[in-house]
Length: 480
Image (cartoon, rainbow, N blue to C red; front, side, top):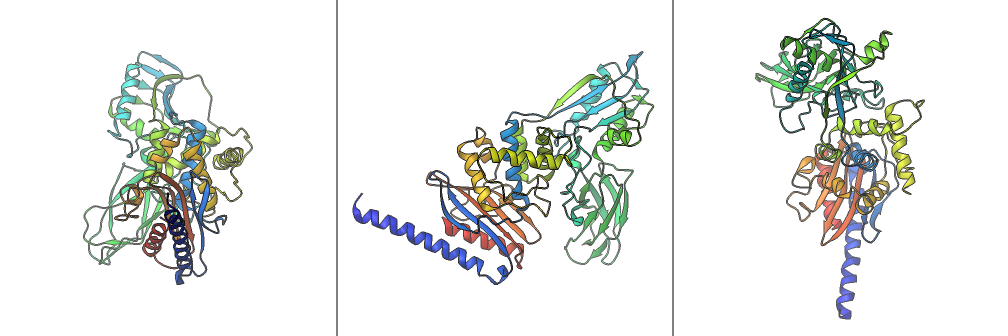
């Protein structure tokens, strides 16, 4: 290479860094960033060099970008071929087609049971279960259908999430047994502005739910509706406004007690199939609470397995699925042996931090209280994220599965519109995150066989989400 070409190359790199640093300074000096905090890093993975950074060790709220930490750790500890199992079992004896005992649904924490994110007929699973019960020679049950969710504790959601998220479809709990993404849909008929909308029905049917309707109808297309309620409580409160003149306006909420609901749901399906059941459906939590839980010898009727973890991680990061992420954290908590820890969430966090500490990655800026990033006390730094991304690219045996779980910016998933139409469309694989006054993007950018780890997290800005996203987008483009 001729000397002037070498000089020109270095000059272009130097000018590029000056331009990018100026872009960072301009971004940080914006009026809406007064009082805000940001943690930024761009790292060349192949050369192991930091190209740009700002306050990269600052602990900031990541929102759903926390799923990168959860999914990476889960892949490393369980492997991409790991599958959840759900067993249909019975105790007692079968005499003359009558089961003198109970049918059990033994959960393993599988978040995918009946999930809408899994291809195919989500109800086929239950037909398979009923068919297996029939094949086992059971036409009647003297006992009950019992959900055994005992593999996890009863802390379905982190204690650190906001009140406004409790009862929402994205704030659903994670339990030893999960069903239909732990979500229901409520259908409303709205009528004229100023009126109170009528609740028409729910899917699935939830006859035990008590809806307290404080909604009103507005004269625009604006939807400010939210559903509030606690785990294990059948009371749900509907607040806000929704558009007028809609016949079946839809909103989603959380199923308050998924294990108990699944026991009820399977009981109803068996009764419809003419399998007589004497006892009422129940679950481990209620039986233990009432001092009625009994360990007994069981026999397996059938076993249902989930898709491999590789596919579940893809769904988690592509769709930003909170239930899946929290289920992962609880699952790896089982690898942590101290039974005196506060909760599965707490044990899972210790497992995560212990793993990355062993890999030589500084976890001092990592504060987790759930697996999905919904907890407002979750904190992480851009530096930690870039170190994790570098490890997952260069050292993890599951590198391909992890990287491909991140949607391509400008093309798919939760980053369909991010960097769309730009030179980085399709060249960046990103996980995004957002909540009130939080916006974050982290992942990989590949240009001319060079691979970069990127993390930008901004907290406490005073502009709209659309504006902060557009300015972060411009900042991304300045880096490359």
